Length: 61
Image (cartoon, rainbow, N blue to C red; front, top):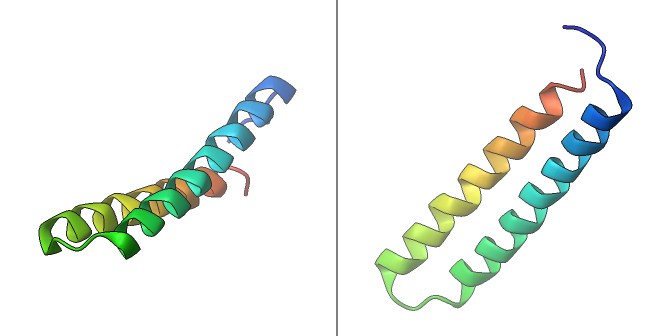
């Protein structure tokens, strides 16, 4: 992989932070959800955010 520019690194950092915040919010929403289908939707969306964050972090290696 080529070296990333400073702007690309900053953008990647922002995307990783966004995915972490999104994961935390969706997990919180899932914790408060009463309807099982809604809870499952939030849980899956949270997991998707976590997976995306991990994938983005892999670009730093």
